Image (cartoon, rainbow, N blue to C red; front, side, top):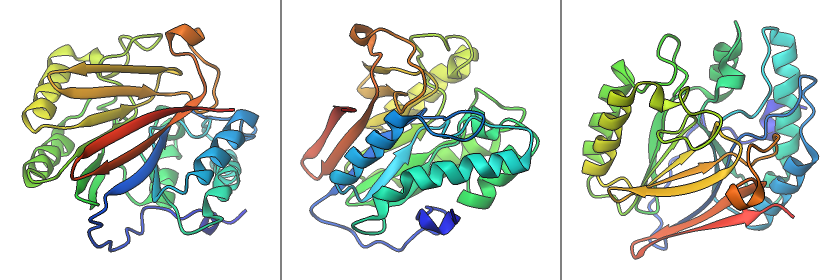
Length: 265
């Protein structure tokens, strides 16, 4: 299936400000198998998202299994794009992806991600809100937001001071609760804590994260952190501890925001 079947966010449209606000969905960690085939639950998740008619969809990473072979990677990506196609039924729905470790790992993983999506970290405005996508998989800086990216982030947050809401997407969580404790952004606790302070000082509304295949929500110093890794891959927890296949439906306007957890039927 051709890549153009999915509206990639690399070709950033020029959007006017929408006074009524913005509606979008968020998912992560659907992943699929080595053969590229996506889980059946992910197909159901996409159809449920499409029924909500979001303006765009944010991903928190691990959309494919990954491989050292470029041919295999392309096969896996094409299966992912095909699974996402129902989102285009009503209108152009842009996909806003944060890179995950699975699609980046391997010799050609990062190059192919850039080929499809143009950038690994960036920001944009919509409906009075500001959106930031971060890259926790920078070669040599895995599990960190550091160097040029961190300096860019500081400048970007300062410029977004008047935004109604500020939403951040990143693959590895700052405060993991499950199997990825120690290999997420908590691998470097001092840097993680400084990043959290940066978010709090700049009144970040919510940080969407993946990596752990579960749902978890916690609030620290006014910043909401949501791990939303229930996109289709095997779950890491029991249902009572957040082990459910799900996505988030988010609405934001000048009066505030609302986040609904939508369980996949």
